[in-house]
Length: 170
Image (cartoon, rainbow, N blue to C red; front, side, top):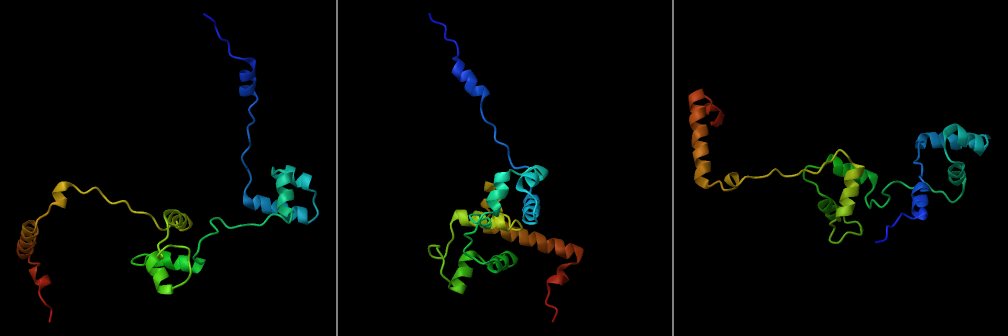
C-alpha cells in the first residue's frame, strides 16, 4: 500500500490565494475626491487621503464613465411609478397600462416577475403579502353556519340594546 502525501503545489495554491478588498468608501466620499482632483489636487494624494484606488478616480474622471441609474430599464417614468405606489389600493400595472395606452415591452400589458421585483425594490413602501394558512374548518363554512352566526349577533345586540343601531334612521 502506498501512502499519498499532499503535493507541495496544492499547499502553495492554498496559501497564495488572492483576497480582494471590498470598497470601503461611500459614493459621497468618491464625489468629494473627484471634486478635489478637479480643483487641482493630485490623484495620488487624494487616493491615499480617501482610501480610494487611484485607477477608480482616474476612470471616473475619464470620458468612458457614464453614471447609470440602478435598474435603468424601468419602462415607467418616476412620476408614473409614484402614482402607482400612492394609488396602490385597486390600481395594478396592467390596468394602468391599459388606461394609458402607451408602448411597452410587456405581453398583453402584464409585466414579468423580474420587473415586479425591481419595482418593489425601487419602492420599499410596497410589500408583498403572504396569505395566511386557512384551516379546513374555516374553509368549509356552510350557509347554515353563517345563518347561525347572524342569529347569535342579533341575540347579542338585543341583549345589550344595540339592535336600534341597525334600524333605518329616517
